[in-house]
Each structure stands twice: as structure tokens, then as C-alpha cells.
Length: 290
Image (cartoon, rainbow, N blue to C red):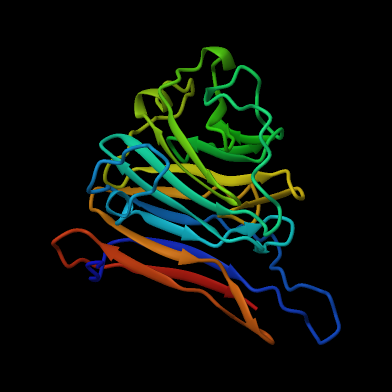
């Protein structure tokens, strides 16, 4: 049972509903120079997370939960469901995920079966989860991928390769923890990104570990190769890096992407989970373009 109270978090969502201008037309109403950058509050998890791929409820109970993926090709909800779970413990970022593969597609494509660091880069080779992180928000741009960055590609076998600004790929510290769990067409897993690894990025920006009010840039999505190529994640385009705001209180939220429910109708849902003993304020900011 969740302890629901008015809770301290701000989540900025721009829910874009692509509706035709008239019946039979295919034109979408997209604002000029549209740039949606989601904002996710990352709560301090109240329980230690065992990185075993099992997503135990007591470990992730107060995590921020982002459900229903967005397909970058259409900027609409992807055909398969899933979620990301976000939280932190001490100075380490934790990420859990569940991805339901398209029905009939079978298990994710795996060329590299050995768990742990892969000497062969995995980018765009397997069905991968990709994570991009910058422990600051200043001067983060798109140049092929996030720049500067710590970037990771991880497959369903538990293999991963990573890249970090200022480092040779083969010399990047490997304190990362990652365990994958595949059951038929369901792929889930857990990751821990230690601060003493991410902090070694060679940049001019001021790097700050997770603590109350600290902001990072981060992006997490699936680079799906089978049964068809798709980029599915929390943002409509890779250039729109979400902002991650850390909070010391175990307060999280959950949100779905836009779901079309009828002719020119759409809906989304958001819920709050408060693991603290305090009654505190929360705000929900959103814009709807129709």
C-alpha cells in the first residue's frame, strides 16, 4: 500500500497530441521549433537495491516510474509497453527497466552472450538498452549522441559497452553493475551507476553527485533492432535530453505517455508516491498542444 500525500516534486511534461486538421487529412499540428525536454524527479530510495534483475517491489516502491514508451519515428506511444524505474542511494544512480517485446517477436537479438564488459562495442548491433548521462546540465549538446557524456549500450545477455568523454573506451572504469533477466518476450533488468565512475568524466563543467536539488542530464531508451528498427524511450527525440532532479526524500511519481482513446481524444495518468513522514507540496506542470 502506497503512502499517498501531497508530495514534493515537479515533473514537466509536454503532452503532444497529434491530431489531423480535418477528417481525411494527414497533417500534424506540431508547434514550430518544438523542443520537449522532460523533467524527472529522482528520489532517494528507502531500501537497498540488490542488482539481480528481479525488480523487487520493496526495493523500487518509491522510485520514479515512467511507463509507456514513445516511438521516435512517430512521437506517439510505442506498440509495446514497458517502464523505467529511477532512484538513487547515497551517491549512486539506480535504473530498473521492463520492456515487453512486440508479440510474436521472440526474445531480444543477442550476438554477445558473455555478461559484463564487452571488448566489442555493442552500439546498434543487438537489441540494446542505451543510457546517456551527464552529471551537470550546462553545455550538454547533441553530436551523434550526448556530448559530453557517459554512454552505455547493454544487451539482454547482461553484456555492455560504454563510452566516456576524455577516456579511451578500453580504459573506462567498470564499477557499473548490470543484471538482465529475460522471460520469453519480456526483458527486464537493473543497473547501478556508481558516482566514483561517472565522476571521472574529463570535462570543464562542475560535476555534482546526487543530492538534494542537484540536476543532471540523462537519456534512456531502447535501440530496437528486431523485429523492426525503432528507438523507443522517454522522449520524442534523442536531442531532447531529460533533466534529472535528485531529491533526498523517498518521493517518486509515475506517469504514462499520451494514449489515444477515441476520435480526437487522448489521456494520460500520473500518480504520486510519498515515502517520507512529512506532508509536502508537489506541482505538476504540463502543456498540451492540440
